[in-house]
Image 1 (tube, rainbow, N blue to C red):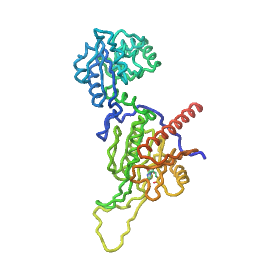
Image 2 (cartoon, rainbow, N blue to C red):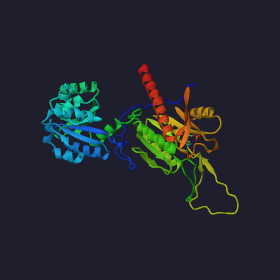
Image 3 (cartoon, rainbow, N blue to C red):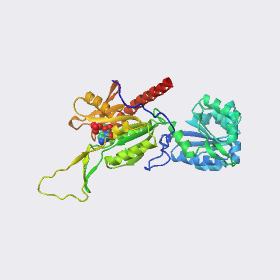
Image 4 (cartoon, helix red, strand yellow):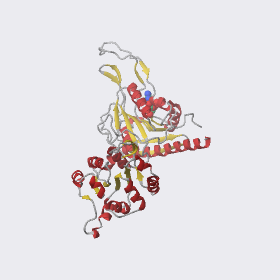
Length: 438
Ligand code: C5P
């Protein structure tokens, strides 16, 4: 039966921007760089001074960095600066003994080669496949991914010669990062500024991620909510948040920009994930809606949100009395269903803790909430909550899949892999639909 949900609107619209700052101190977006070996090529432009900061950030992310400078680069920054920051020798030109084959050794050592800044001349020489200085030779000898961060005067960037060179490099699989637009050292305004070091580091880091959700903005809710009865008491549930946190970590591993809206839990924020802490269901709804307004491609509702809350929480502590007391409860807004009805809406994934016929309940819940995917887990006899392992039945329109009992970390990775496949299907069919109706 066809679902009546609105089509997924958001595809990979733009690079996520959640890495540059945020609510949690763990927000780095650089966690894939640890122990990675980066050859940083620096060519001769004024932006070379920013490459010093680039080396500092890469070292801060526990990467190893070897800097190769072109002769022109040394007109702008001294080799000693890079040597001090990288803690490695700096290569400027061929050694006296060319049989040392420094270019081959550096090319083999590198997991990635990044040329930043890449001047118009360097791009031209890379496009020609030249090997007449050490940096060009390393780029030619490297079998690892090569990225360039162009930096030059705007007219040089727009010149057809540069446009052709960049097009040729792109066709050969070279990643061209930037340039940004703005005021230039020469006083002109336009495209040609090197991307900021933090952005280059984030892109390098992302290039090492598992990648199925690279560039996708994922919002996860996790943990319980607390609904106040009075200033010292609340209604809550046994959710530990472990599954939601594992899902957020797995989505980040898959390259997504992840924001986690978390109820009160005793868990460390996953590396590289932005965490927004809330207590009540109302605060969770507000935080989720604020994130949707910023842009979100996939929403994963893993929180155990209260279904009811005290209708009138007392301002003062309720005093104990001998007789029984009644607590009036009112229903809480369903966050997942609200997100699924929003416009534009993300691809929506819900969780369902069920007893009895899991498949039937999961199908019903998927339809009633209007979401693409439900991950249902059995909770008969206390299974599921506050345990380190779990099992899931995934249900989507026209299909289902069982994920066997395993650790929540492994299960979350399998779930994220499945979400990535379904999300890609949804965005592709959306794209096809647009083409056919165009
Ligand atoms: O209706 P039920 O609570 O069983 O549905 C569970 C799913 O709905 C979970 O994904 C949960 O995060 C979400 N939910 C919600 N807001 C509520 C109640 C549940 O988003 N008020």
